[in-house]
Length: 200
Image (cartoon, rainbow, N blue to C red):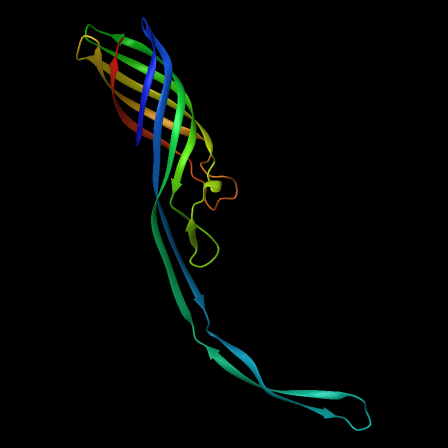
């Protein structure tokens, strides 16, 4: 999910400005692991005695052993969660109108932003039972850079108002989590953006 507001200046076919955005990234965490233990014999000492050899100073120990069968046990660990990362982004953008008509236009957009982590929630795998743990804030990179490219159209619906749908590609640069995290996730998406443009 992405929501934001843009403010800029338009001159002829070109426009440029700054943006403030809220971005929520969600993905499903799925974990399954089967752990088997047992299916072996365990030796146990039930008694011991020693023999002193005559004519020698040596003492020989003897042990009476018994064995116990440890049955096979299998445990299936399964866990599902919805992981979510929320960001506040500050960016810049530029657009160019490659087609203009009386009451509409088509444009291309390019932009970049710096996104700051607001909150995180969800789970990740770990090496101890139950083999999953909550994601801590220290596991997430607090600042990410992102870029956007888009193709859109604007339709005049009022004296100073345009309706502007846009097909946009967005991606964050680098992994979302710090080095050493059990899995590395990168964020990129295609989405349709709907907006209103107001001219002052």
